[in-house]
Length: 484
Image (cartoon, rainbow, N blue to C red; front, side, top):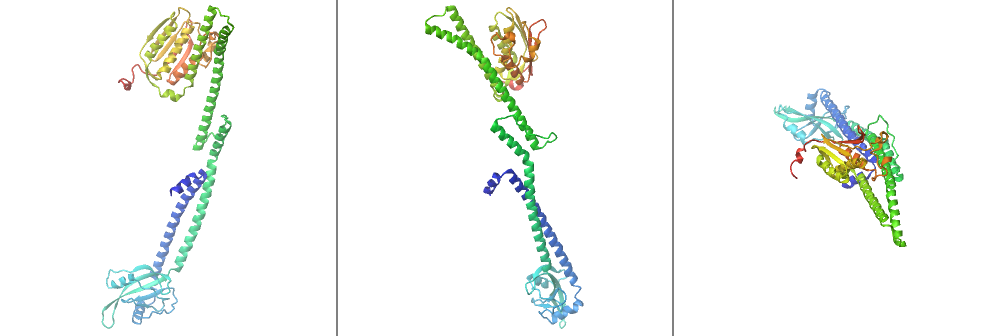
């Protein structure tokens, strides 16, 4: 059985569907056929029983015939013109046929039971199947027959049997069984063929989907789409739409990946070129024995250090952007935003000691990744420090989940505002300043993953104001109040 199940599971879906449909139809047809056969059999036997009862009244003067048969008992039929068996059965089992009986019916134990109870007024007859003397099957009605002995007047128990042949009924039932079997076979074969045709038609979209998947695997062409009817909403249509959405998302991801690689290569080229030039100058100085002036040597080493720092920052930003959503989701927790802002402010004051940074920070708790959220706030503050004039002021405020950072620098031109969160985008006026062009992109991504939004705009009176809005609450959720 298990081998058949395993073999069934290895069949194609079309074959399995066709077999399942054929099996279901076979079961239904078999149930209907068997029910029909038994119903017809019951009706035919009911008709036979009625015929037997009617035959009781077609024997002419029945009492005289019965007495004559009993007193002049003979087992030889007289070739009656009726297709009926009629006989009297004595207590010892002797069968005495009536004059118009076509044969003799074999007496059974059930007939003897009827004879024994013949004198009982509550005794009734029985209907059964039996055989005649030649072995032909007949339908038999046995009735109790209490007789009175003419000489002694004593009651004599006997039985009267009347029977009709079953050959016609059995032939009818056999023909019906054959017809039902043929119809069932044709029905099962037709159901299997119909199931196979339906499976092929129903799975045709799956074939197209399979071909599309194989084409994508073979050619890596993510532009492949499966045509779907707009008004269709069945399982195949939903599967096709899901595949189209998946390939579209993969194509976008692949395009963004290629763009990121291209942009990263472009950004890495400048510091690497500068590093190579500076190192070649230092190497040539060592090889030729002509020392570089101390001031120039210090400048070269400072440039190398700056380029190394820029490369490290760029690689760190790229690693941050390349992290998957699943890696981020594992580290999300409730974070006190005010503590994150305070930590970022300390770092910002170290990077801009000549600036005045004021802060008004109120409690606010959010769900985010702590290190990513702090990096985003640091990037916003670094941006303000970078563009603030010497001795300028930076104003930081956190209230009801809204963090604003306002500087008094040159501000952002209106035509550049739509691009400030693009990867590797840098304002023409800021390209001489250190940076990878990924800082604000990381800010936007981190804030969006925390369910918030970030904007940059020109501030009234000059400068830039950055606004971060994060959902949360002024108090931590109950599950975070207990230690551990």
